[in-house]
Amino acid sequence: MQILFDIGGTKTRIARLDKNGDMSEPIVYDTSKMYGDGLSRLLGSIRELADTEEISKIAGGIAGPWDRSKNSLISSPNLPDWVGKPLKQTLEDEFQAKVYVENDAAMVGLGEATYGAGRDFGIVVYFTVSTGVGGARIVDGRIDEKVIGFEPGHQIVDMDRTIFPTEEGIDLESMIGGRWVEARMGKKPALINDQEFWEKMAHILAVGLNNTIMHWSPDVVVLGGSMMNKIGVPLERVEAHLRQIVKIYPVLPPLKRSELGDLGGLYGAKSYLEQQTSDNS
Image (cartoon, rainbow, N blue to C red; front, side, top):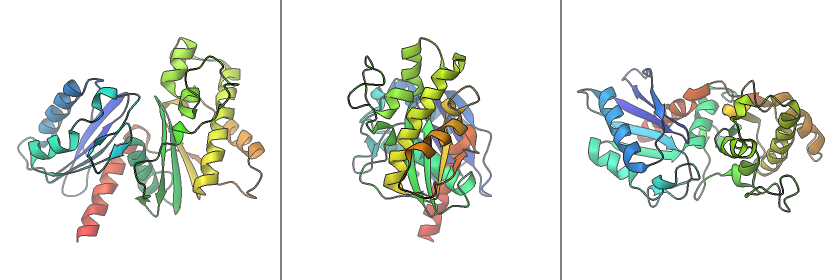
């Protein structure tokens, strides 16, 4: 039996994978901002799913860039208390299983590239606009090589603070990430019914996507996350703005909505384990 997890900035999801490759109904709960509490809840949920069965492998994603050499988070705006903590080593010691950890957006991107909206494309860019903004480049069904991690949400889009003069940050995440939008507007993004506001968010996202498309040259861009919901950034307006911005490419890669929803990270972890099995066979 194998375990899949997705530790996001807002929610944590954990599921088991049986020998036939079937995924269980996930356990879902609010992610604890404190590492000790979060680890305790994670270990308890894994034990509940495993029951008396032996766990062979564990894989999942966590919100923030993951340092494979140190096996810990380097930084995480949404989970600062988890930074530098021995998550991977603790899971290996506790369950005597091989453990694989990646950035959460990269795992979701892998899930979308292999099981979701990007499954028919070779080079997939996945972008999540949620509590924060993240993404990854997936090539031929695998997370692309990198030294530390992909962080497209931290690209600079407002260098001279002309968009939001009083905003603390100047990167894409600070402009359109859910946590920052809520702080700026004083309400949950899902409660904002101002069409002009969402039009502005679509324009800012299009600027970020332009930069990412220029750097990563994908076949398709898949967009997901809570800020892309019905009350949120309108995809058709993002595409309209993008067509006005991009001049050097004769054809834009299609923009697609994610298909796996909240389960994208678990499907990414499933795909990751399938690749590990294939590579070792």
